[in-house]
Image 1: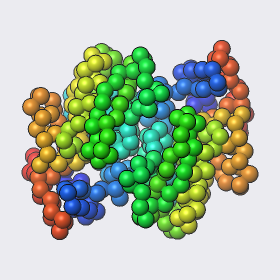
Image 2 (image 1 turned 60 degrees about the vertical axis):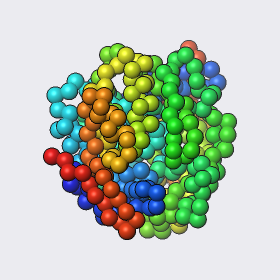
Image 3 (image 1 turned 90 degrees about the horizontal axis):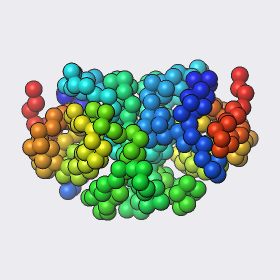
Length: 193
Length: 193
């Protein structure tokens, strides 16, 4: 999606270790006009699918997912990183490894809000190794719900997550896929039709 | 705001210890059509104020704040509950006591995204004892920014937070103020014009 790629080139900051900072418009300060354009693009890409719920994970996915949910006219549920105090039989639970924070989170969704009747579009800001997405897919599976697709803002195409998801036959729409980046600010995007 | 009060009566669940669960439409599953109506009401209530930024705190404030930001046409910044790994000179920092989780959080906002040029509308889902809001006000003050007002979805009027904020002369607009609630589901809302 050209408008997102242009914005990443303009305002994204490449740091050592293949870190891309987009905190001025995606995941600390958020540009909701951009989110709206992204939502409209996902609406086009997932047209015809019987999506009745958006699923994301706290915290940085929530802003994008809320704007997407408004555009699709469906509720959004965010999976919570749980303190053990909240764990009980009323929740679907999984564990997600965070490399950014070097720890494992328990992640939960209430059984009330994810059921076999749900046709889910998963939304998140980043896809790299795929750990967060695999966790969300597990929660959807536990619930007996159906994944209709996954919408990602920025995929690091040089990490394994995207390939793992696509191998499973899930429609994955990443609006910008980065194939390479270097600390002098050069970013190579994968060509997408 | 009648539509929110009606929804709380219909879908809110009162638990012992003055706990009100609104996780089916506010802070786990989120009804973004309702958020849009709330955003329009805040737009009316804060009309004429030179608001150029929305500020909230992760996680449950983000969804509402994103919809509000779209309506106001300004960016939204969410304060992050920090792992110590992120603490550095680039952030404004404060501490917030969470009674729900019985712990103290370090909360940060990047100095890049809160400056003396900012006229801030703070948005959050709940106001009870006011600890989270006091922390956000401290961050705004550290930054030399101006608080134009505070918009809260649900205020527990029988706790001290609202009174403390109003004493400071800040325009606080809570769309539903609960003066009393009981476990048989009775909820008394404060009359507001």
